[in-house]
Amino acid sequence: MFMRMIYDEKLAQAAYIFGCQRTGEAIVIDPERDVDRYEQVAAANGLRIVAVAETHIHADFLSGARELAEKGATVYVSDEGDADWKYQWLDKKSGGGRYQHRLLRDGDRFMVGNIEFTAVHTPGHTPEHLCFMVTDRGGGADKPMGVVTGDFVFVGDLGRPDLLESAAGFAGKADPSAHRLYATVRRFMEWPDYLQVWPAHGAGSACGKALGAVPASTVGYEKMFNPSLRAARSEREFVDFILDAQPEPPLYFARMKRDNKVGPRLLGIAGGGGVPRPRPLTASELKSLDGRKTAIIDTRPWAAFRSGHVPGALHLPLNATFNTDAGSLIGEQEPIVLIVEPGRVEEAVRDLIRVGLENVEGWFDSSQMESYRAEGGRMATISERTPEEARVLLDTDRPFVLDVRRATEFREGHIPGAVNIAHTRLLSRLDELPRGRHLLVNCRSGARSARACSLLRRHGFECTNLAGGFLAWEQSGTLAAR
Image (cartoon, rainbow, N blue to C red; front, top):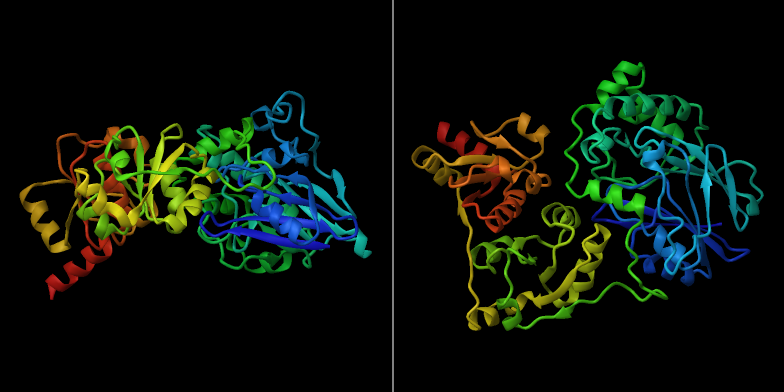
């Protein structure tokens, strides 16, 4: 049996390829949208992808299951859960007809080559959630080697049960989902300790609150040391623990739930041809853009951005949070232009299409901003103040203080009078901010607040970023007290 985890570091998401080397057949479980990566791995190992499966309807990325189905892969997905959580795209093949598929219930089995997969209904994170027990029948095994746990069991954590309410907008679902998750945990405790655990996410994912950075574990190890499992000593203790201190879900999660249920739009990439390729723009073309109507993503460092950028541009460095930030700060229908290094255009486009932002119309070389200026392009700036300067500003101008950290961070300490809105939810809550009043924006270290300031400026707010964030604010207060 061949097995490979394909990991997206930015979204902390794991897809798995299992292949039968005797028959040359392979399956991908929980693929992202740009499926050429999985095809390349399969081909390099003498395999062809004949099947695709999903553990559940995902919230944090657009699935590639439909892309692979369009190329002939048989689809295996859940038929558990209520009517709100049924897949709606299986009969919508391009050109008409249905995709080859099989709907799975608890205990159902299917084969890919000589590898057996057993579906186990594990509700709680979502109502339809499945895990897949994997048994290498071709190798003579009659018991599973491991289990693809999706968003049920992570290394050191469990999939959060509140997303149906906090992200998808189904009021009153968090507490009942937590109780369902408790029942599923009791079932997990009966699984053999030797089973390997292959989760869908690692550290950095917003699908839990304390995911570990180790890529895999075992059932026995998680029983002993997973804090969420250890909290299951009683149902009430477990529910209180699992619902406490969950991070705010990024704004785009609701869109991903919707699109993965009704069916992501097909990219139309045939034969492993890669991702869409936007055209390069001239300085004159960049100059003609209106940053209020086109989402101009400027990936340059903050110092360069704040000292001069296209008016209305968003400061979104091409780092580990790029997907999440872009998905949260940009509307799904907005046209997009990138200001980026030429060698990183494809990386940026892949990141964007994985969170449903596919209207990338062009890109401009980030090293050529002087040519934009020479063409008469306007340059906007953003104010930034040190903590010492910010204290004076608070005494003289009385700005509105906006803290864009997570609520759990805010509760541990904040600038007096500050209002807390996580930066990944800010776009949906701009109407809560005062127009005509200057905003002083902070986060922990100044990075998230910088991105928030660019969003605020795009939408007509006047704001100042707190350099160094709350860490620097606390430090400056300590020094002043000495």
